[in-house]
Length: 305
Image (cartoon, rainbow, N blue to C red; front, side, top):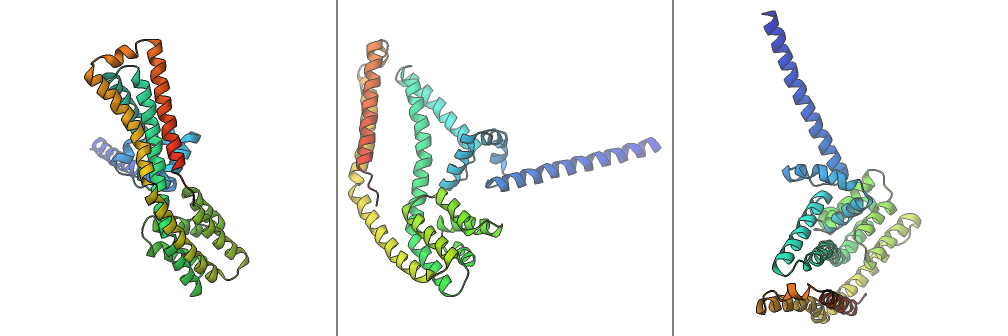
């Protein structure tokens, strides 16, 4: 009986210790994810937790985490790296099978550039949405400041009233100031996440007013009118340059479509063309010309206001 009792006690203590150990690990994982700015600890995040930690060890992984935070997506650096690697490998395989083995590395490079461009596109879209909310943001801050509220309180109130992405970004600013960051540092982090000229002007106005005081209400009122005018100007320019933007993307699509059409009309022609050195050089020159054309058209359609 004594042996049985000791055995049962040992089993109970072992189960309790295992439960406490698992609970401690879960609490530590939740704390690390919260400090890292990750959305949660669901099954998808747990599946990529190891890869995410390895990616964050490198400088490019930390920069990738910053870019993902600026896009407003729930992807972690590990998830994005795994997805990008899968897309690159799939593009390599499809291009090698459908077109010719020579086009596999080229398709992989295009897929990698597409993954990077996806982040830039999401970041640009989020920045444009934030810029569109800047007049309302300046108006809310001006009203709150005129009512006698401090800047920290005004930012917190604006974070609650405005919709995403302005509400989400201002909540991050308010949380940073709540843990001891200065107004300049918190707004500087916002500027790094969503860089734009309009935001720089707004941040400069808020920082100078917090340092030296002055009629911040009148400055914000004038800034609201200016931001409304710039918003309308940007909208008109985007409408007028939409045809040029479509042309820029139509140029590479026509080139890829020509390759597929040529291989469809004459099966095996791409393999025969890329089987010699002269054919490979011609293909590379053609692809380079398409890239140059795409870049020049995009540069001509980019007008900074």
